[in-house]
Length: 227
Image (cartoon, rainbow, N blue to C red):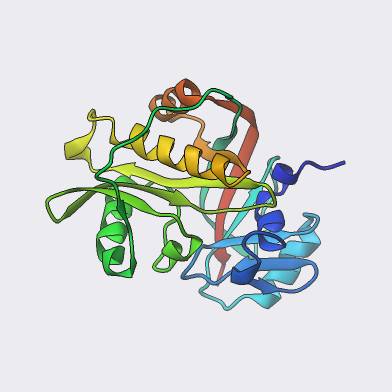
């Protein structure tokens, strides 16, 4: 039987992220202003053909799979990324975190977008805040670090958009934000997980030190119709 996290986007769109879902019984996706992810109940090249007919011509799509896939020529590959899927496995309680953490709101979206553009934590769109639970650390009025939640497949919750302004690295902000997200997710009775590029050794070490372990390889294909 397939594990929930083997098809994380699909399972999120039929459970915890259902309120953000578009599509039909075989292909589902988020609004492109929320996230570029598309998902298939079962992946096949035929499903990519169906997706081609379904999406507008300039709408980028990101396909997430636990195995490498071939992309037909009718699609242009904007970027392909190999990563790890990591799941939280520790049992011990984590220390309390920075009390100065701020709940991020729509008023913070311009700064959130600017920080994500600068640090490139992964896809981060105009309405990504609708995934919820975003917290930030500020220096005065300046947002210098943030993290939130993204995919929510059944009893798993993905920690996402963990990023720190380059002028503020080394202060432990990412770790503090991660601890907050882990504690929040566990308090809700869910299991934290995340995705990370497989060459991001620094981030992987931080995640492992907090109790995450690599579950499997994961592949991201960022595509758009070739015209």
